[in-house]
Length: 396
Image 1 (cartoon, rainbow, N blue to C red):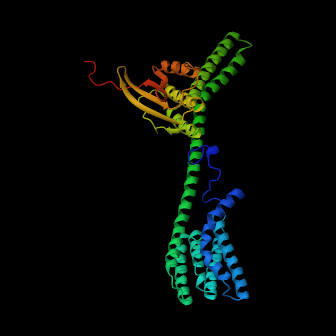
Image 2 (cartoon, rainbow, N blue to C red):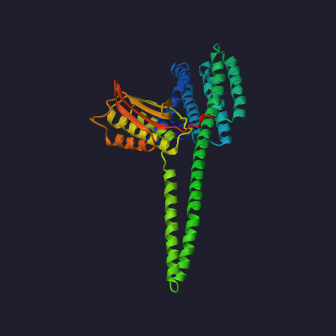
Image 3 (cartoon, one colour):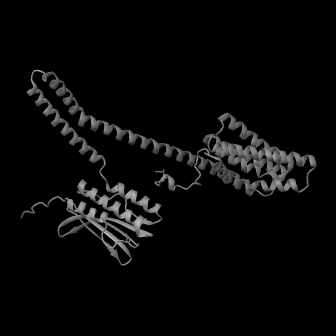
Protein backbone atom coordinates (compact mmCIF):
# COMPACT_ATOMS: atom_id res chain seq x y z
CA UNK A 1 0.00 0.00 0.00
CA UNK A 2 0.98 3.60 -0.56
CA UNK A 3 0.84 6.48 1.97
CA UNK A 4 -2.60 7.46 0.72
CA UNK A 5 -4.05 3.98 1.29
CA UNK A 6 -4.07 2.86 -2.40
CA UNK A 7 -2.04 0.01 -3.88
CA UNK A 8 1.19 1.00 -5.58
CA UNK A 9 -0.13 0.01 -9.00
CA UNK A 10 -3.09 2.41 -8.64
CA UNK A 11 -1.00 5.40 -7.73
CA UNK A 12 -0.78 8.08 -10.43
CA UNK A 13 2.40 7.61 -12.43
CA UNK A 14 2.78 11.34 -12.95
CA UNK A 15 2.59 12.27 -9.26
CA UNK A 16 5.33 14.66 -8.10
CA UNK A 17 7.08 13.50 -4.96
CA UNK A 18 7.06 16.54 -2.68
CA UNK A 19 10.40 17.37 -1.11
CA UNK A 20 12.21 14.43 -2.71
CA UNK A 21 14.76 14.33 -5.55
CA UNK A 22 13.53 13.16 -8.96
CA UNK A 23 14.00 9.46 -9.63
CA UNK A 24 14.18 9.78 -13.41
CA UNK A 25 14.18 12.28 -16.23
CA UNK A 26 10.40 12.39 -16.40
CA UNK A 27 10.11 13.49 -12.77
CA UNK A 28 12.89 16.03 -13.30
CA UNK A 29 10.99 17.44 -16.29
CA UNK A 30 7.77 17.72 -14.25
CA UNK A 31 9.57 19.57 -11.48
CA UNK A 32 11.07 21.98 -14.04
CA UNK A 33 7.63 22.57 -15.57
CA UNK A 34 6.36 23.40 -12.08
CA UNK A 35 9.09 26.07 -11.79
CA UNK A 36 8.86 27.57 -15.29
CA UNK A 37 5.58 29.57 -14.84
CA UNK A 38 7.38 31.74 -12.29
CA UNK A 39 9.65 33.02 -15.06
CA UNK A 40 6.85 35.34 -16.20
CA UNK A 41 8.52 38.23 -14.36
CA UNK A 42 11.42 37.98 -16.84
CA UNK A 43 9.13 39.37 -19.52
CA UNK A 44 10.06 42.98 -18.76
CA UNK A 45 13.86 42.45 -18.97
CA UNK A 46 13.48 40.49 -22.20
CA UNK A 47 11.27 43.22 -23.67
CA UNK A 48 13.83 45.84 -22.61
CA UNK A 49 16.69 43.97 -24.31
CA UNK A 50 14.74 43.50 -27.55
CA UNK A 51 13.52 47.10 -27.69
CA UNK A 52 16.84 48.46 -29.01
CA UNK A 53 17.21 51.11 -26.31
CA UNK A 54 20.71 49.92 -25.39
CA UNK A 55 23.94 49.68 -27.30
CA UNK A 56 25.03 46.42 -28.85
CA UNK A 57 27.61 45.81 -26.12
CA UNK A 58 25.11 46.61 -23.36
CA UNK A 59 22.49 44.37 -24.96
CA UNK A 60 24.93 41.47 -25.27
CA UNK A 61 26.08 41.94 -21.67
CA UNK A 62 22.44 42.14 -20.58
CA UNK A 63 21.58 38.84 -22.26
CA UNK A 64 24.57 37.13 -20.65
CA UNK A 65 23.71 38.56 -17.24
CA UNK A 66 20.04 37.62 -17.59
CA UNK A 67 20.93 34.05 -18.60
CA UNK A 68 23.34 33.80 -15.66
CA UNK A 69 20.71 35.13 -13.25
CA UNK A 70 18.04 32.73 -14.54
CA UNK A 71 20.39 29.74 -14.48
CA UNK A 72 21.51 30.55 -10.95
CA UNK A 73 17.91 30.91 -9.79
CA UNK A 74 16.80 27.64 -11.39
CA UNK A 75 19.83 25.82 -10.00
CA UNK A 76 19.16 26.98 -6.46
CA UNK A 77 15.43 26.23 -6.50
CA UNK A 78 15.70 22.92 -8.36
CA UNK A 79 18.52 21.59 -6.20
CA UNK A 80 16.60 22.61 -3.08
CA UNK A 81 13.85 20.09 -4.02
CA UNK A 82 16.05 17.08 -3.39
CA UNK A 83 19.81 17.53 -3.02
CA UNK A 84 20.39 21.07 -1.74
CA UNK A 85 23.77 22.76 -1.59
CA UNK A 86 25.54 23.20 1.73
CA UNK A 87 24.61 26.17 3.92
CA UNK A 88 27.59 28.41 3.07
CA UNK A 89 27.22 27.65 -0.65
CA UNK A 90 23.52 28.55 -0.57
CA UNK A 91 24.27 31.80 1.27
CA UNK A 92 26.96 32.77 -1.25
CA UNK A 93 24.77 31.98 -4.26
CA UNK A 94 21.79 33.89 -2.82
CA UNK A 95 24.05 36.89 -2.17
CA UNK A 96 25.31 36.66 -5.77
CA UNK A 97 21.73 36.50 -7.03
CA UNK A 98 20.81 39.61 -5.05
CA UNK A 99 23.91 41.44 -6.28
CA UNK A 100 23.02 40.66 -9.89
CA UNK A 101 19.49 41.99 -9.33
CA UNK A 102 20.82 45.25 -7.86
CA UNK A 103 23.51 45.77 -10.53
CA UNK A 104 21.23 44.98 -13.48
CA UNK A 105 18.43 47.20 -12.18
CA UNK A 106 20.79 50.14 -11.57
CA UNK A 107 22.58 49.83 -14.90
CA UNK A 108 19.77 48.84 -17.27
CA UNK A 109 16.77 50.60 -15.74
CA UNK A 110 13.52 49.99 -13.89
CA UNK A 111 12.42 47.27 -16.36
CA UNK A 112 14.69 44.94 -14.43
CA UNK A 113 13.17 45.59 -11.01
CA UNK A 114 11.20 42.34 -11.26
CA UNK A 115 14.38 40.35 -10.66
CA UNK A 116 13.94 41.04 -6.94
CA UNK A 117 10.91 38.70 -7.03
CA UNK A 118 13.21 35.76 -7.77
CA UNK A 119 15.64 36.81 -5.09
CA UNK A 120 12.81 36.88 -2.55
CA UNK A 121 11.51 33.46 -3.64
CA UNK A 122 15.01 32.00 -3.43
CA UNK A 123 15.52 33.45 0.06
CA UNK A 124 12.28 31.92 1.33
CA UNK A 125 12.85 28.55 -0.33
CA UNK A 126 16.53 27.91 0.36
CA UNK A 127 17.65 29.79 3.46
CA UNK A 128 17.06 28.66 7.06
CA UNK A 129 13.85 29.96 8.62
CA UNK A 130 15.41 32.59 10.90
CA UNK A 131 17.79 33.85 8.23
CA UNK A 132 15.03 33.92 5.60
CA UNK A 133 12.96 36.44 7.62
CA UNK A 134 15.77 38.97 7.54
CA UNK A 135 16.81 38.11 3.98
CA UNK A 136 13.32 38.65 2.56
CA UNK A 137 13.01 41.95 4.42
CA UNK A 138 16.46 43.09 3.30
CA UNK A 139 15.69 42.16 -0.31
CA UNK A 140 12.42 44.13 -0.20
CA UNK A 141 14.25 47.16 1.24
CA UNK A 142 16.93 46.88 -1.45
CA UNK A 143 14.22 46.82 -4.11
CA UNK A 144 12.64 49.99 -2.69
CA UNK A 145 15.98 51.81 -2.61
CA UNK A 146 16.90 50.70 -6.13
CA UNK A 147 13.40 51.67 -7.33
CA UNK A 148 13.83 55.17 -5.93
CA UNK A 149 17.19 55.39 -7.64
CA UNK A 150 15.98 54.34 -11.11
CA UNK A 151 12.71 56.27 -10.93
CA UNK A 152 10.28 53.41 -10.47
CA UNK A 153 6.70 54.69 -10.24
CA UNK A 154 4.80 51.39 -9.92
CA UNK A 155 5.29 49.97 -6.43
CA UNK A 156 2.85 47.06 -6.73
CA UNK A 157 5.80 44.64 -6.90
CA UNK A 158 6.84 45.56 -3.35
CA UNK A 159 3.91 43.65 -1.90
CA UNK A 160 4.50 40.77 -4.33
CA UNK A 161 8.17 40.51 -3.35
CA UNK A 162 7.36 40.56 0.35
CA UNK A 163 4.43 38.12 0.24
CA UNK A 164 6.11 35.64 -2.13
CA UNK A 165 9.15 35.46 0.10
CA UNK A 166 7.11 34.65 3.19
CA UNK A 167 4.83 32.33 1.19
CA UNK A 168 7.85 30.28 0.08
CA UNK A 169 8.94 30.06 3.70
CA UNK A 170 5.54 28.56 4.53
CA UNK A 171 5.76 26.15 1.60
CA UNK A 172 9.22 25.07 2.72
CA UNK A 173 7.94 24.44 6.23
CA UNK A 174 4.99 22.46 4.84
CA UNK A 175 7.30 20.32 2.72
CA UNK A 176 9.54 19.67 5.72
CA UNK A 177 6.52 18.65 7.79
CA UNK A 178 5.33 16.32 5.01
CA UNK A 179 8.73 14.64 4.85
CA UNK A 180 8.84 14.22 8.63
CA UNK A 181 5.34 12.74 8.65
CA UNK A 182 6.31 10.31 5.89
CA UNK A 183 9.38 9.23 7.85
CA UNK A 184 7.35 8.92 11.06
CA UNK A 185 4.75 6.78 9.30
CA UNK A 186 7.48 4.51 7.94
CA UNK A 187 9.02 4.25 11.41
CA UNK A 188 5.68 3.36 12.99
CA UNK A 189 5.09 0.68 10.35
CA UNK A 190 8.56 -0.76 10.97
CA UNK A 191 8.02 -0.76 14.73
CA UNK A 192 4.66 -2.48 14.29
CA UNK A 193 6.26 -5.14 12.11
CA UNK A 194 9.04 -5.65 14.66
CA UNK A 195 6.51 -5.92 17.47
CA UNK A 196 4.53 -8.49 15.49
CA UNK A 197 7.68 -10.54 14.90
CA UNK A 198 8.53 -10.38 18.60
CA UNK A 199 5.00 -11.46 19.50
CA UNK A 200 5.20 -14.38 17.10
CA UNK A 201 8.59 -15.34 18.54
CA UNK A 202 7.22 -15.19 22.11
CA UNK A 203 4.18 -17.27 21.19
CA UNK A 204 6.23 -19.91 19.43
CA UNK A 205 8.66 -20.05 22.33
CA UNK A 206 5.82 -20.44 24.83
CA UNK A 207 4.11 -23.05 22.68
CA UNK A 208 7.07 -25.15 21.62
CA UNK A 209 9.86 -24.43 24.10
CA UNK A 210 8.53 -26.65 26.88
CA UNK A 211 7.21 -29.33 24.51
CA UNK A 212 10.46 -29.67 22.56
CA UNK A 213 12.52 -29.73 25.76
CA UNK A 214 10.30 -32.49 27.13
CA UNK A 215 10.51 -34.45 23.87
CA UNK A 216 14.31 -34.17 23.91
CA UNK A 217 14.53 -35.31 27.52
CA UNK A 218 12.22 -38.28 27.00
CA UNK A 219 14.03 -39.24 23.80
CA UNK A 220 17.31 -39.43 25.73
CA UNK A 221 15.65 -41.50 28.46
CA UNK A 222 14.12 -43.85 25.90
CA UNK A 223 17.50 -44.30 24.26
CA UNK A 224 19.16 -45.24 27.54
CA UNK A 225 16.33 -47.57 28.60
CA UNK A 226 15.97 -49.34 25.28
CA UNK A 227 18.68 -52.04 25.73
CA UNK A 228 17.74 -53.15 29.27
CA UNK A 229 14.17 -51.92 29.79
CA UNK A 230 12.28 -51.94 26.48
CA UNK A 231 8.92 -51.71 28.24
CA UNK A 232 9.93 -48.50 30.01
CA UNK A 233 11.41 -47.18 26.76
CA UNK A 234 8.09 -47.87 25.03
CA UNK A 235 6.30 -45.85 27.75
CA UNK A 236 8.64 -42.93 27.13
CA UNK A 237 8.01 -43.15 23.37
CA UNK A 238 4.27 -43.09 24.04
CA UNK A 239 4.74 -39.96 26.16
CA UNK A 240 6.78 -38.41 23.33
CA UNK A 241 3.94 -39.10 20.90
CA UNK A 242 1.39 -37.54 23.24
CA UNK A 243 3.49 -34.42 23.84
CA UNK A 244 4.19 -33.98 20.12
CA UNK A 245 0.51 -34.33 19.25
CA UNK A 246 -0.42 -31.72 21.84
CA UNK A 247 2.28 -29.39 20.50
CA UNK A 248 0.87 -29.83 17.00
CA UNK A 249 -2.61 -28.95 18.26
CA UNK A 250 -1.27 -25.84 20.00
CA UNK A 251 0.63 -24.71 16.91
CA UNK A 252 -2.43 -25.18 14.69
CA UNK A 253 -4.56 -23.18 17.11
CA UNK A 254 -1.98 -20.39 17.18
CA UNK A 255 -1.67 -20.32 13.38
CA UNK A 256 -5.43 -20.21 12.95
CA UNK A 257 -5.48 -17.24 15.31
CA UNK A 258 -2.88 -15.45 13.21
CA UNK A 259 -4.78 -16.24 10.04
CA UNK A 260 -8.19 -15.26 11.41
CA UNK A 261 -10.05 -13.00 9.03
CA UNK A 262 -11.11 -9.73 10.68
CA UNK A 263 -14.02 -7.58 9.59
CA UNK A 264 -12.22 -4.18 9.81
CA UNK A 265 -9.43 -5.49 7.57
CA UNK A 266 -11.92 -6.80 5.04
CA UNK A 267 -13.79 -3.46 5.04
CA UNK A 268 -10.57 -1.64 4.21
CA UNK A 269 -9.75 -4.20 1.52
CA UNK A 270 -13.25 -3.87 0.06
CA UNK A 271 -12.83 -0.09 -0.23
CA UNK A 272 -9.59 -0.51 -2.18
CA UNK A 273 -10.90 -3.35 -4.39
CA UNK A 274 -14.08 -1.50 -5.36
CA UNK A 275 -12.22 1.71 -6.19
CA UNK A 276 -9.71 -0.26 -8.23
CA UNK A 277 -12.59 -1.75 -10.25
CA UNK A 278 -14.08 1.68 -10.91
CA UNK A 279 -17.07 1.09 -8.59
CA UNK A 280 -18.32 3.99 -6.51
CA UNK A 281 -18.12 2.60 -2.97
CA UNK A 282 -19.75 3.55 0.32
CA UNK A 283 -17.98 1.54 3.01
CA UNK A 284 -18.18 2.21 6.76
CA UNK A 285 -15.13 2.65 8.95
CA UNK A 286 -14.41 0.75 12.15
CA UNK A 287 -17.54 -1.22 13.13
CA UNK A 288 -18.65 -1.82 16.73
CA UNK A 289 -17.76 -5.46 17.41
CA UNK A 290 -18.59 -5.47 21.11
CA UNK A 291 -19.98 -8.86 22.11
CA UNK A 292 -19.33 -10.42 18.70
CA UNK A 293 -17.47 -13.77 19.01
CA UNK A 294 -14.35 -14.20 16.92
CA UNK A 295 -15.94 -16.99 14.87
CA UNK A 296 -18.96 -14.80 14.06
CA UNK A 297 -16.76 -11.85 13.08
CA UNK A 298 -14.71 -14.13 10.84
CA UNK A 299 -17.88 -15.45 9.17
CA UNK A 300 -19.06 -11.90 8.42
CA UNK A 301 -15.62 -11.03 7.07
CA UNK A 302 -15.77 -14.00 4.68
CA UNK A 303 -19.27 -12.95 3.63
CA UNK A 304 -18.02 -9.44 2.84
CA UNK A 305 -15.09 -10.82 0.85
CA UNK A 306 -17.36 -13.09 -1.21
CA UNK A 307 -19.88 -10.29 -1.84
CA UNK A 308 -17.23 -7.80 -2.96
CA UNK A 309 -15.62 -10.43 -5.19
CA UNK A 310 -18.99 -11.02 -6.88
CA UNK A 311 -19.50 -7.28 -7.36
CA UNK A 312 -16.07 -6.80 -8.91
CA UNK A 313 -15.97 -9.90 -11.12
CA UNK A 314 -19.53 -10.74 -12.12
CA UNK A 315 -22.07 -8.00 -11.46
CA UNK A 316 -20.95 -5.19 -13.78
CA UNK A 317 -22.06 -2.72 -11.09
CA UNK A 318 -21.05 0.94 -10.93
CA UNK A 319 -22.14 1.55 -7.33
CA UNK A 320 -21.89 -0.53 -4.18
CA UNK A 321 -23.00 0.21 -0.63
CA UNK A 322 -21.80 -1.69 2.44
CA UNK A 323 -23.52 -1.35 5.83
CA UNK A 324 -22.72 -2.91 9.20
CA UNK A 325 -25.58 -2.44 11.68
CA UNK A 326 -26.75 -3.84 15.00
CA UNK A 327 -30.38 -4.95 15.04
CA UNK A 328 -32.72 -6.36 17.65
CA UNK A 329 -34.75 -9.32 16.41
CA UNK A 330 -37.17 -11.73 18.07
CA UNK A 331 -34.27 -14.17 18.46
CA UNK A 332 -32.02 -11.56 20.08
CA UNK A 333 -29.44 -9.01 19.05
CA UNK A 334 -27.64 -9.57 15.76
CA UNK A 335 -24.89 -7.86 13.80
CA UNK A 336 -26.00 -7.40 10.20
CA UNK A 337 -23.79 -6.97 7.15
CA UNK A 338 -25.56 -5.70 4.02
CA UNK A 339 -23.90 -5.38 0.61
CA UNK A 340 -26.01 -3.83 -2.16
CA UNK A 341 -25.03 -2.99 -5.73
CA UNK A 342 -26.74 -1.84 -8.90
CA UNK A 343 -25.39 -4.67 -11.06
CA UNK A 344 -26.93 -7.76 -12.59
CA UNK A 345 -25.85 -10.10 -9.79
CA UNK A 346 -24.06 -12.46 -12.18
CA UNK A 347 -25.26 -14.79 -14.87
CA UNK A 348 -25.96 -17.83 -12.70
CA UNK A 349 -29.54 -19.10 -12.33
CA UNK A 350 -29.10 -20.28 -8.76
CA UNK A 351 -26.83 -19.79 -5.77
CA UNK A 352 -23.19 -20.53 -6.59
CA UNK A 353 -20.64 -22.46 -4.61
CA UNK A 354 -19.50 -19.26 -2.87
CA UNK A 355 -22.95 -18.43 -1.49
CA UNK A 356 -23.55 -22.06 -0.53
CA UNK A 357 -20.28 -22.14 1.38
CA UNK A 358 -21.13 -18.85 3.07
CA UNK A 359 -24.52 -20.19 4.16
CA UNK A 360 -22.87 -23.20 5.76
CA UNK A 361 -20.18 -21.05 7.41
CA UNK A 362 -22.80 -18.71 8.90
CA UNK A 363 -24.99 -21.57 10.06
CA UNK A 364 -22.09 -22.96 12.08
CA UNK A 365 -22.05 -19.77 14.19
CA UNK A 366 -25.84 -19.46 14.36
CA UNK A 367 -26.11 -16.88 11.60
CA UNK A 368 -28.17 -16.55 8.45
CA UNK A 369 -27.62 -15.45 4.86
CA UNK A 370 -30.05 -13.79 2.47
CA UNK A 371 -29.01 -13.02 -1.11
CA UNK A 372 -30.96 -12.21 -4.24
CA UNK A 373 -31.85 -9.69 -6.88
CA UNK A 374 -33.72 -6.54 -5.96
CA UNK A 375 -35.43 -3.94 -8.09
CA UNK A 376 -32.23 -2.15 -9.08
CA UNK A 377 -29.43 -4.60 -8.50
CA UNK A 378 -28.39 -7.31 -6.07
CA UNK A 379 -28.40 -7.43 -2.25
CA UNK A 380 -26.64 -9.75 0.18
CA UNK A 381 -27.46 -9.71 3.91
CA UNK A 382 -25.52 -11.75 6.48
CA UNK A 383 -26.45 -11.83 10.18
CA UNK A 384 -24.67 -13.30 13.20
CA UNK A 385 -25.85 -13.32 16.83
CA UNK A 386 -24.33 -10.93 19.34
CA UNK A 387 -23.71 -11.86 22.97
CA UNK A 388 -25.50 -9.40 25.24
CA UNK A 389 -25.36 -9.36 29.07
CA UNK A 390 -28.51 -10.56 30.75
CA UNK A 391 -30.65 -7.97 32.49
CA UNK A 392 -30.76 -8.01 36.30
CA UNK A 393 -33.88 -9.77 37.56
CA UNK A 394 -34.75 -11.21 34.18
CA UNK A 395 -35.44 -14.55 35.83
CA UNK A 396 -38.57 -13.12 37.41
